[in-house]
Length: 483
Ligand code: ADP
Ligand code: MG
Ligand code: ZN
Image (spheres, helix red, strand yellow):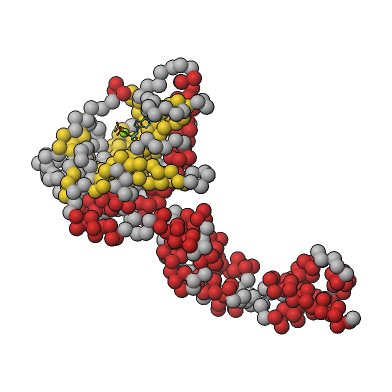
């Protein structure tokens, strides 16, 4: 409906990059045989006492600092009580009030190039539940507690997003930031980054919130986009038909592309939060905050404006920030040979597509930044042409071979020596006297035909920029000699 606008708020869960769980020393590794990474604490045995993982606290505070949140010196763990077979304690250990971080924001780029700030409400620490596995063969549901007690942060936004695209862009940007900060590995297929999407509609221009649906546990950007679109259509139809929109919790069926109701507000859990008596308050010292602040990598905004000052256009430079390693690779290569746009194009056209294909951090590619810098220099000096680079790059990438040596070995060094190009040009003019005469007579367009012949004769190795000037001068100079 054109007179309504969507309002969206997100609750994002990110698994913290720790070796061990939040309150015990069991490993957080993924994919271990069921119920092998468990102990009396993470399986909720009576009398077992939790102890806070210091690394988890640092990562949560680091995320907050990078997002401009206030980090509370003291925050509290609470018990969020509910019953589920994969929740052995009978409660989740979470933070209600105060959480470790409050406020903050993250900006997204809008279609028209401007930026929109999405405010954050809070970031809190909590532990994950185990998993129920429905085994059709046994006709039974089994419980795997390996994931129980894994540390998470939950990031809660204000309802500042207004379309599926904004929601997806926000999530992508948040994901890339948290991965770059090494707060999370962010592997979405393993559920390390997932979110609940709250969505309502309201008349355009209104500042009241409509009744919302909450879609649980989406773990792909595409599903978020599809679920929001579906929910907008579903709620619009209700408003159009004057039917009530109920506040409810929904599940997104990615096969059907539909949301389905799990429970309504009346059936909502009453978690009876109360302070977790087994844990002391979480303390983040001012010294720790200082140390974490200093450890933060360059912000996205700072990196983009630095790159744009180097001549890498903002729209394209994002490429270096979207996945880990790319910006560091660029910086290293640029440090060796300071031609930002050439290094960027080599990365954009050749290196990064291959790295993404292989899910590889560019820094770990056999073709390291020094070699890319050499290649950029060879191009600048006219010793490597675009065509040979295109032909040889996959091999350089695979083997990490030295570009200069490889070009030589393949006989693909670019010919940029004027005399050598002139010699080839002479051949061309000799074998195409009519075309040369036509050019002399003022048929300008025929020059590109002659340059093409020259390139062919050089097997694509002549520097094309020089070639056209040299053959033109040759033909016109001949003219002068004759007259
Ligand atoms: P709860 O914890 O019950 O899910 P919160 O008040 O903590 O509810 O809000 C959770 C998320 O839902 C936040 O991101 C918030 O911005 C968003 N939200 C709350 N009300 C609405 C609404 N009417 N429409 C869209 N988003 C909403
Ligand atoms: Mg919620
Ligand atoms: Zn344990």
